[in-house]
Length: 244
Image 1 (spheres, rainbow, N blue to C red):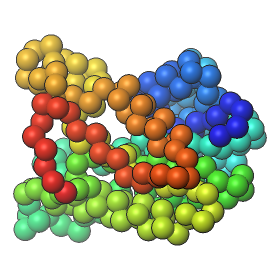
Image 2: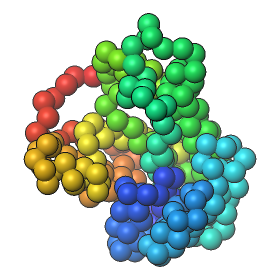
Image 3: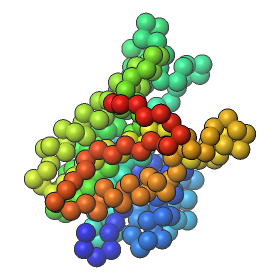
Image 4: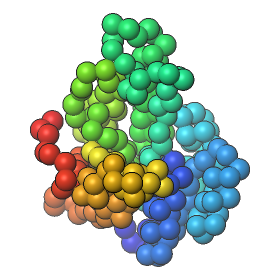
């Protein structure tokens, strides 16, 4: 990436805010996509370009990425750190047992997650084509690599997300566009997680730090053509290794 690289983040709260701060301090030009006034103000406070859009809406995301290119000059790296799974009151995390679930459960968990990834990858690829290439990084979690009881709906969404990234990576290899999957297979440090560390309900070596994620993003974005990684898994030392 000649000159000063650029980073656009979708999902700019805890993790996204840290990425803006970290890469901005390292000299990158940064921007982020958000909907709420509070988050847009926080983006500006990090010294980044604030882009108002719904990242799950194709037309809005396409316009936001076009605006990012106009503001930053180039599009080098676009990271999707959005979370779209919102349980209904009283609903088990992950959707619950399939025999107790209805179609609305699948739409809230499975369909919402895979739709988000489809919009990100398709619109992101079109935006990077306009500039001759770049890197798309889709964040996910351990549900993308395995399914567990009562969490089939969320796992189905994340495994569909993984399949979309893998397909896009094969399709776009010759266009110098690299769709990558970054799996954060553990709790990411945030104010909520910090409280659990403080009360002893979570061990420090069972947590992934935002800096570790930033390091992984920098690695994926800085690869040369001689050796490329399209999927990278981060798992804390304090958790047992579980094969995919």
